[in-house]
Image 1 (cartoon, rainbow, N blue to C red):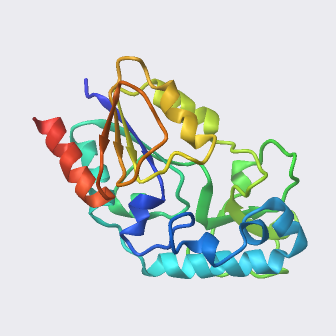
Image 2: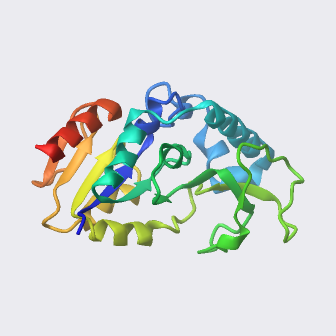
Image 3: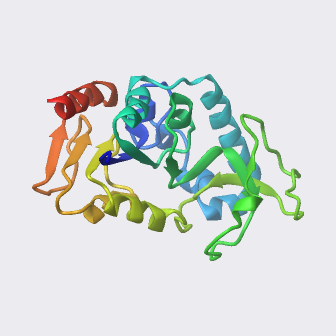
Length: 234
């Protein structure tokens, strides 16, 4: 039986594709007020601004291409059962060929009807794939509500976190790529890995995680994946 690799990815994977990240130096949070464009309160205050922000991100994504790290992660499926859990809202993992991808924070190419801050769930059949199209104020879902980005805003729950925990709990190997492990609840997922599972972290920066199972590969995602695969083959 093939071993199971669970891969948790963050913005560092997409950065080398030229897709603007949020938290890094020069990232989007330095250009935009996060509370205005990526929070539930911001949506309520100015939904037009939020829609324009994600329209621009969608246009940027259309021109981005998967990089060698995305391709290497997809290539692991040749020899392993691979589940990808990503904090990224882009579709670069899917475009690289990964077949099982769980998006913790939503998907840029999808929209859904707006819903209340304290609603715990939304119906999956309400989610609409719009590709790289724009969404404007007045664009309504079939239920008559304004369409909003299919993104988990700050201040909202993360509906997929329980599924992610279950995936990590079944890992033979946990691979963490391009994430600072500072955004919760995703940052705590590694704690659910079985005691027998080695944990590899690929990131050029220090990460605030201490566990004897961890091997820290200090490299950008593309170079780090080369080193990780070499380790698997050793």
